[in-house]
Image 1: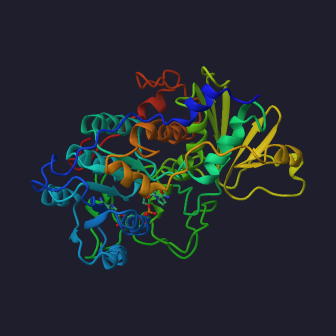
Image 2 (image 1 turned 90 degrees about the vertical axis):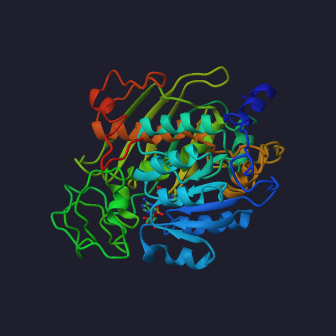
Length: 453
Ligand SMILES: NC(=O)c1ccc[n+]([C@@H]2O[C@H](COP(=O)([O-])OP(=O)(O)OC[C@H]3O[C@@H](n4cnc5c(N)ncnc54)[C@H](O)[C@@H]3O)[C@@H](O)[C@H]2O)c1
């Protein structure tokens, strides 16, 4: 059934709250600075994905004036791109010294330090872009939400945008009724491509290089000895070691597999895959989440898992079940695909009158019938151009924090079901999981080394 015009219009709007833009001169910048100046940006955590994303930010119009990283070697390639930018090791020093010189902050650190950096930047009334997943716990997400409402600045999360050509085309086709009414969505990722399935923390200690600050890297996480590289062969039988090109135990990149620092494959890719379904069907919170996985571990995520989310019916959409797969698991290939296989990443929409893989209608006859559905949904320029527009007082970015919190909770709640092996029934108002006390205990996590939220 095609959606009514009212349903389409409602669905095409973003769930984000209106964003009040505060120009730099109001925030304490140079008196008289014109509000249409280039937006000045500080990058924190710049050696990994921060490298390409800060170049994207520059290309979108930001002026990168300050950079911060705890690893001089890993960050060097980014320092070299922005030789004029002032350099810092500790983000608190950056915020103290640059207070009136920066309008915006980009955070590209590992998951366990997103919240402390994002909160500090919002409390300093900066526009903030944070890599996904926005936070590592649900409590952190709600603290960020409160802070962004108080700051009123322009925010963005680097999820795969729901405003791209492919995303908008998928919505237009589904809203036009190309595959009927949808009650079932499957989303998957071939990750991990980093070590996962560790039985325990390393039982050795390595010297910390003088070019690296391990204590700042740990931030609020429990103090533990630094371990540099994994040995030549997988130390534990069964441990996923798909990406031994990067041998770091924790840093760089491989923090992802540890509970204490990362959010596993679901946290890494779930926000990208779920972003469009969340926008398209205006999803908020599932009523029930169940999970199964390969062997579970105390300190790391399992090698593969499957998580089922049940969403209640809304005014415009029926009940929807979204199933997540990772570690190489995927939904069964439908008969209409013949011998074709699914690629490593994707989303399958199952409707009452057919199926779509991303924006492709699988039934050739229906694909032809719906080939001329008009383009009605606005395409936008990507993560950084959207954020730049918002910082300049324009339209809010598509993954602004208000919108992004439920998508972030999608991955965090899924992980609670995986980690506890039990169903999760989450009350988003009271933040309670009455049916699962272990999951309830993980909604917030302790902060160490003097850090607080
Ligand atoms: N498309 C995307 O949006 C996308 C893609 C990749 C990664 N990510 C996210 O980016 C984050 C980082 O992933 P990565 O692969 O770049 O990791 P990485 O380890 O390669 O890079 C992280 C960088 O942050 C630095 N860092 C760590 N702690 C810091 C601190 N307290 N202060 C300043 N700098 C600090 C590290 O030294 C390093 O240079 C993760 O949360 C990941 O999920 C997002």
